[in-house]
Amino acid sequence: MRSNFLLIFVWLLIGFYSHAQLKQVLTEVEPLSISSESGKGSIYLKVNKSSNYILTFDISLGSDFVYMVYDVLNKKYITDKIRKRDVKLKLHKDILYAVIYVTSENANINFVLADLDLSIISDDALRAKISNIKKQDKTFLLRDLPSFKLGAKLKKYILRTYSRNIYLAYQMENSDNIKVSSFIENIGWFDISTAVNDNITDIACFDFAVNSKGELYVVFTTKSTDDFSSELIVKKFNSRKWIDISPKFRTNIGFLVNISIDKRDNLYVAYLKKVGSEYKVNFVANRGYSNIWNNVMDSYMSKGDAYVDVSSIGIISEPFLGIFYNYKVNDYVNSEFIVDRGKTWANANIQSANMADSVKLLSNFKSGQVVLSYITKDRPIVSVFSLQDDKWKNISPNIRIKGITSDILSYRNDLLLTFEDGDDIRLIYFDEDNWYFLNESEIFQKSACKPQFAKYQDEGFILSYLSLDFKVLSFKLIS
Image (cartoon, rainbow, N blue to C red; front, side, top):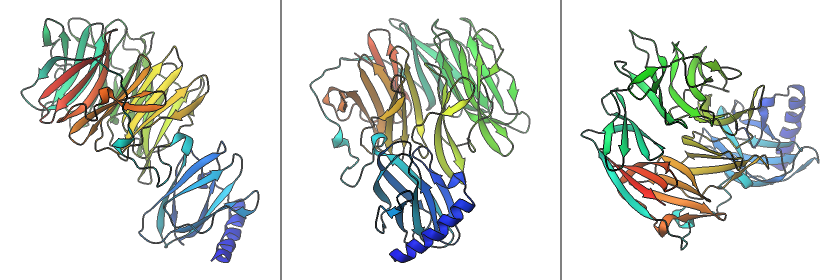
């Protein structure tokens, strides 16, 4: 069998140098998907740093899949025949490797290469389980705030704060109306105005933000109907009513939309627009006081079709502009984080995920750190980028969960992560390279879902969560 592999490799190597294609090279940044008609072939590996990696295969057929890994530079095999779906490899920078495989005919194969320095997956010895989270004698104070009770089911809500005000942008099931409600201590909850969308119907998605002056902004998209084209709409609250500052983008607008505000109160909106047969990501900016919008560098970027069924696009405006989005190529979903390098968008050199949901981005301008969080394949992923070191570090807890909603928050010297797990909510924090349960409680709140964080002045932070019947929003002030 070894000699057969060698013959296959020689044949493939000749073909590779004759018909070299960059898409046949797998890196730790970009997964690779191929179709193999003959069932025999090779892909090539190249990494940006010497490290231990996990090579993972996802094959469309349930047939045998046998492969070997070859060091092209040193002309030697670095593995024997392998049949496992995952294999740990020691790979070196600037060396070309070949993975030579034999499987069934007409197989579709997805390859992923994960750097163990940036991965929560190592080998069978590491199990994804809640018991990996530790406990320590560190106490946070908890105080219940008045709940937000609803007569019908809540479809979506977004929590924001400014000074001592707490804001909720929300939408009920079976209703297109987007409303914003405010909570003021000793007064309670009240809707600040009529519906944001006024008489506009067929709402697809919305996002909500508050700037440094306490001004409220809601951005939303509409669905295309027989009577109206899809549209991107931005509204600002002027202390009396919602005014329209939309860029007047109509036709072929996708459903996803997100907004970010930088320290100078500039608005940034990421949305989808159909270009040809695919939806692409576009990024526009506004100074915050008019309806004048400008494209941020190249418009309509994304590698594939960005119309992916997830809850958000991740965008950030400090300390740099960045977009984290999912895209689909040949029915396989990947993700990419691109950042503004001054004249063009560049890949942020972070490992791609397969279907990243509940994407959140945090930034600390003083420390020059960016935190990225999302959920993929029942695992919460947390990565931290340092401007000083110019590299990402994955600090994800090695756990598997049952849920798709999570949120992150930086509070004092701690990074907090909350997420759904079955019918309960867990709350953990990162301190000194370990994750700990808050107040040593493995379950922070039973019979609850859809948690969100928001800072609350210097007093602490707020955690909101929804009852399982979707009719009561509860809030805890934590300090």
